[in-house]
Figure 1 (cartoon, rainbow, N blue to C red):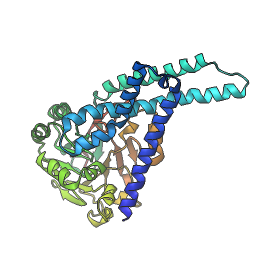
Figure 2 (figure 1 turned 90 degrees about the vertical axis):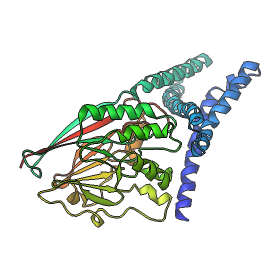
Figure 3 (figure 1 turned 135 degrees about the vertical axis):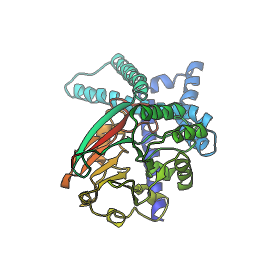
Figure 4 (figure 1 turned 30 degrees about the horizontal axis):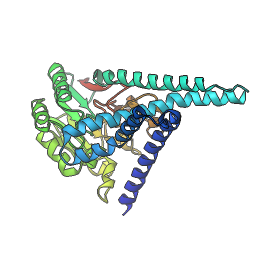
Length: 378
C-alpha cells in the first residue's frame, strides 16, 4: 500500500509541475492565442497535441511501438525542456519587471512582447546547442595508485552510467560506447544503472553491439531506478543478453586483487515491499590485499560505509543535464559530479552519465565515459 501511495504522490507532483509550466507559457501568450483566426486555431491545435505527447510516448513505449515513441518522445520531451528554459528566462525578466514597477516604472505592451520573444529565442538556442552537446561524449581519465595492488599490477576500468537506451537512444550510442572500449581497451566494463528505459528501439542490434565488447575481466552492471521502472524481468533480460553480469546486493572477486560489489537502487521500493540491504550484509570490511569497488546507482554514502569499499562508482544525477536545473538536483544530492575523497581513504566518483533522460539535450553538463587506471604501488 505504501508504495502505491508513494507512486500516486510522485505522479501527482509530475502532472502538477507539467501543468503549471504549460499554464505559464500559455498565460504569457494569451493575447496571441485568443485571436480567432485560422492560423491561430491551428497553432492551438498543435499546442494541445504537443502537450499530450509525453503521455503518448509512455503508451507507445510500453506497448512495443518504439519507432512511434521516438517521434512523440522527441517532440514531447523537447517541449518539456523548452518550457523549463522559458520559465527560467522569462521568470528572470518577470522579477526585473516587478522591481521596475516598484520603482515607479511601468513597462509597455511592446516591452512585454520583446521579453517574450527573447525568452523564446534563448530557450530554442539552448536546445539547439544542447542537442550537439548531448552527442559529444567526454572521456575522463582518473589514475588511482594503491598499495593494495602489486607494483606490476595495472587494471583499467571503463565506467558507464545512465545510458538510457530507449526509443530515442539506440544503436548510435551503443556504437560510441563500443568504439571507446576498442580505443581504451579496458580490463573491466561496469554500468552503474539506468542502462535502459522501456521501448528500446533496435533492441537486438544494440545487444549485439554490446555483446561484442569483451574485456578480459568481463562486464558488470547494477540496477538503477529506471531498471525497476521498466520492470525487473525486462531489465534483467536485456542486461544479461548484452553480456553483463548483474550484481544485486552481492559481491564478486574478479581476480586475486579485485573485488566488485553491486547494490540495488532504492527505487525497488516502488515495485516491491523491500529495500536494499545494508552494505555489510554482502560485503566484508576492506583488507590490505584486495581493492574493493562498490557499484551503486545513486551517489549516497551510508553511515560508516567507507570501511567496506575503496572506490564507489555512481551516476544518477546527470550532472544536472540542463543548466541551471543542476541547482535543483544539488538540493537532493550532496555529491553531484566528479571525484570526492571520503573517510578512511575511500573515494567516490559520480559520473555525469552517457545518455539523457527525457529531453534529448544537455547544456553545460557534457556526457562522459570515465576510465579508471588502478596502478599498484606495493
